[in-house]
Length: 448
Image (cartoon, rainbow, N blue to C red; front, side, top):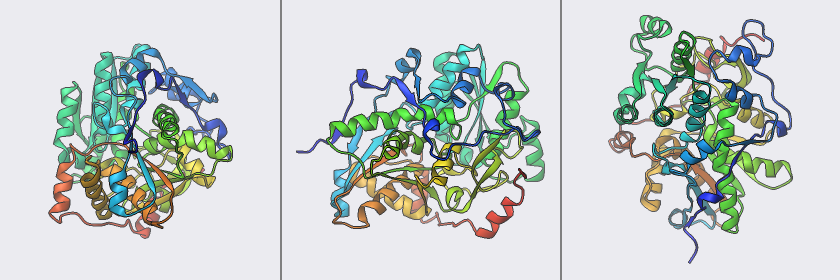
């Protein structure tokens, strides 16, 4: 009988994060100061980030030690299981082997605490009393609420309004961990009030929520800002996922032909992919597929250029695939994937043709999620359904091809059951973001 779950002991958990920046073939462009258009130094960013994280953001070291205090909290749920999806394989009638790394094992049900715990630790180490952040689907907000409580820090979460309305139990989870949560745009910031004045019925966006959280952090001496994806240091923290998966694949006597993850800002996909991308750069034959929603097609319809990470243009200019910083996505249920930009690391790897981006539609993702639930028993988060769908596409391209597929099941969907109910009631629809609308949002890109 083949092994269903491949497990690691706690003493086998990685003790370092991996940094791929020094190995990206075409290199990476630096973030720019929007005023001078010159590379943004740590002094500019230290207004909103602690120096410990800025050192990681700009690090040229391939390995970053994980502090003992972080490892102790990680042990609550790490190492997470690698699971052979043999029941899904049988249902598809494929000769492909499908494995998934299950990050829904964390206390909040997603991969996000891997970075939230680290960010809370480095802020606490520098005496920060309060963190402000944004959240889309609520997974990042829940994670930061969990992490800040562990380190005795206050937490204020600006939650995209459409998700605030769609996901009441995510709010309850954040409240349980002691965080304050408001719908964004909110009356709590000058930027939020300005958006509400112009668009009182807006569903909100991650770009708006980021602007509010940044304003909050920039206007208070006791507060810093925490971001759940996109930036280099977040990508580094998530590599613990792929480093564990690599050890587990070795235990299983297997190696992936293709590695898959859903993409919003890029953190969970990069987390599982980076340790295997290093192998590809050393000559290993492995493919990488990043999956995004057709309704927010950053990688497949956007372009790589410098852009702001938020609507109010408060962030440095980042070199990334973007749909334009004032892009307002439709209210699809995969709220964690509704972001206009893509991580500079992922963007550079797409540019260098190491990552293959694809887009999929909402209904086919929920269909895949239901099949996965019925075969493997775990109900995936709407975001993770995108990775499930891509794995099914790969496994059924040629049913007789004996390939090995690895994907990151970045979170469970137990707090997203209202989305599944809408799917079963026929209330969801596919939405392909029109090319002309993308073109319109591109007109406001900064000129570099």
